[in-house]
Image (tube, rainbow, N blue to C red; front, side):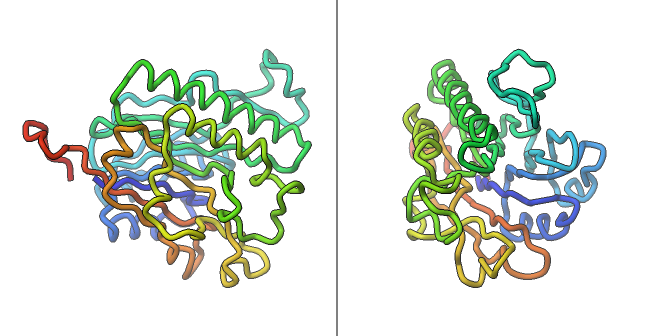
Amino acid sequence: MRIATYNVNSIRSRQARIIDWMVREDVDVVAMQEIKCTEAQFPFEAFEAAGYEVVLHGLNQWNGVAIASRTPITDVQIGFDGQPGFAKGIDYADDDNPDRPTEARAIGATVNGIRIWSLYVPNGRALGDPHLTYKLDWLARLGAATSAWMESNPGQPIALMGDFNVAPFDIDNGDPAVVPGLSTHVSEPERAAFHALEAVGLTDVVRPLVPEGLFTYWDYKQLRFPRNEGMRIDFILGSPAVANAVTGAVIHRNERKGEAPSDHVPVVVDLDLTGPDDDDRPMIF
């Protein structure tokens, strides 16, 4: 089974390119972020023609997450338990303020027995900005929700997939404009929040299988991609059942090339969930 995460940066602008990649690379499940549309605006027919069912959470031209799959999608959940909201100008400490709505940043579903989450972690904007407080709280609550999932469903394959907007290690940042101590994405609190997800039992299942220094995002400005001044901020974090099933991983750097690419590229993982002695389970392709 081949799964992927892809920040598409507007699905309506890139639907033909995204679908062509999915079919060409024989991807079974894709978690997409920044679809930037409502459900009424999503190009369902194009995905269905290519053999994919889609579930999504999109509220407007910002954010938005989706899961596309060749096999049936069940148990869809919009947002995770405890997911915080945000609104510009609203005191972030005011948890009970109804004007602080939950954004379209998380959707979960089960595909072939795997609990998959497509996640678009808040950017943070700048050190000291209320949006950074929101980001850290969002990650902390995601960690709490993940811990609860793993405790209540021991042994279930769980994959948290998406744009985490954190470069966890120095080697994950090649953008000279992103400076530790001065910038978001590389601050110690953000990195600690990311590593706290690993502490609850998740594993970055891609890192051991790709060369060091590969990036998943390059800003459109100032020739960042030709200069390879990017960041690795898109991840697939797996529970032990997922981590133990990984047989390969690829970061598709070439998808940043060509006409009208997203500023992110897909991250792909191959899984074998059958196990060497599990002959009675149905094969998953």
